[in-house]
Image 1 (cartoon, one colour):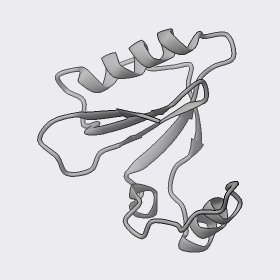
Image 2: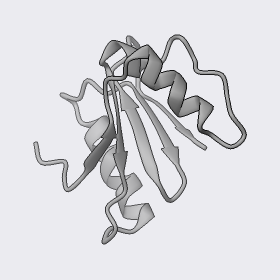
Image 3: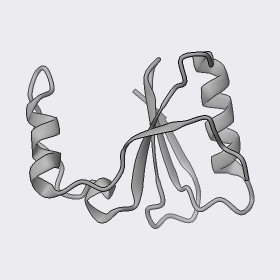
Image 4: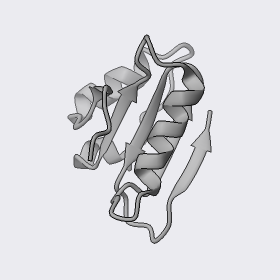
Length: 97
């Protein structure tokens, strides 16, 4: 299944790298210990520069909603990127930040 052109910006993270990401946020935040990135079951993908935000959201949702998709969680960060993961859930959960 073609899902591109998306660029993963973050996939598996070590605990130290994960903490550094949250420490660099403004304001700094506490790194969640249950992040799917720590287990290698998550990815963040950037919205391509030549693709509008609404098209990006529609495309990522279509991929996640496909019958054979293992994606169970999506979180869209307006105008920037989408977090997706394959956490254990029976249905897809979609959130917007």
